[in-house]
Length: 350
Ligand SMILES: Cc1cc2nc3c(=O)[nH]c(=O)nc-3n(C[C@H](O)[C@H](O)[C@H](O)COP(=O)(O)OP(=O)(O)OC[C@H]3O[C@@H](n4cnc5c(N)ncnc54)[C@H](O)[C@@H]3O)c2cc1C
Image (cartoon, rainbow, N blue to C red; front, side, top):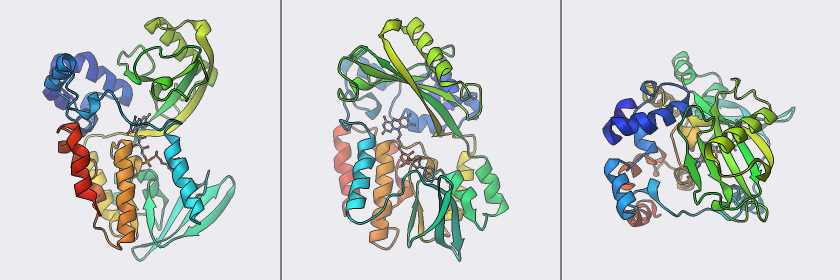
């Protein structure tokens, strides 16, 4: 990763921002992370595009856009609407149910075992699309995967985080949807201002600031009480940013989010390739999504993978190549934004 960032942005920008931000996000040194992260996270960005954007507001690169689509009532509306439709059409969505076992026989998935609270039940299907973390899929297989695959699987790790929300009696504290924060001394790596995403997400006269505090399950940060986490985040925000007053804060809330970011360790590709090759034997299984494929997807990539998987089932084959999503676009996204939709439409039109 270190070499990738230095090539793309130069040593000064690397040392000033990218190194500090990345090491805070991942909790490990940049030289232990694969260069793939640089390509996927800062795709199309380099020192020239940044200067062009700053001076001429060119907006040639997706990461630098000023506007994007977002559901008025929050991102959860997409899955809520999908679930409504599935239920209306006679399907069933099992909520708060965890897949804990995936039974297979003769290169065919037979059923999954789902746990809801203390109850377990077996669910069968003709086709299976998995978006649970790839490592959980492998460790849930019954019979167990072979020893080499289990070794590959044991190397897949994810970064977790606390999401600390502060409800604040202010509107539009900054004009930004999110701000990335690199100094090590500040516990959060990104802050989002929700009334800049949609102005109906917060009560009248207020906004919600959401702080991402990177950590690993079980470490000191993860084990903070909610009260401690809210105090650490609000103290730091108040003193470092000086944008609001303590009396502006109405309340706080903490969400502990596991497996937020797949960690691209050095040589992760060979682990993933072996696992994917192994899974290809199951002809009624497709894997999709961010953790499901262990690929740093954005939402659109994940949705596109889901569409491909569904179309493959409808067409009884594997015409749509899920593995190509978020790979091919690496070159597409460097083109002008207005061309992207047309090119993708051509590529995916049925
Ligand atoms: C903090 C953060 C900010 C982001 N911001 C953006 C953004 O601004 N724009 C953008 O395009 N993308 C963003 N992304 C990426 C985007 O959220 C992902 O690409 C997308 O949500 C991935 O969709 P998915 O279906 O693969 O996984 P998810 O949305 O994570 O859904 C997987 C679901 O499976 C469930 N699950 C897991 N294991 C099991 C199991 N064993 N049994 C049953 N259910 C299980 C999980 O609870 C979860 O509900 C962000 C991601 C993060 C973490």
